[in-house]
Image (cartoon, rainbow, N blue to C red):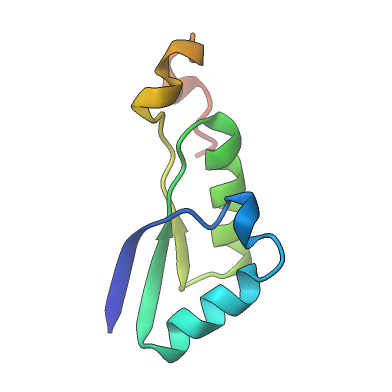
Length: 81
């Protein structure tokens, strides 16, 4: 089994075929896909995607260096668990 550790499935370019991308990955023996969170909004979308595909999609939550100047509060304030 393969694991893809940095997938940007939240990106709008996957809007039309997101499910097909996941299906193709599974068919290619990618058993785990980690959806990358790069800011608060994207991290929340990554978490929602992971929840919709338990055991296959997992999410990260973080702030990409490109977004750091827009981030004002500690990241741990948001973490829902």
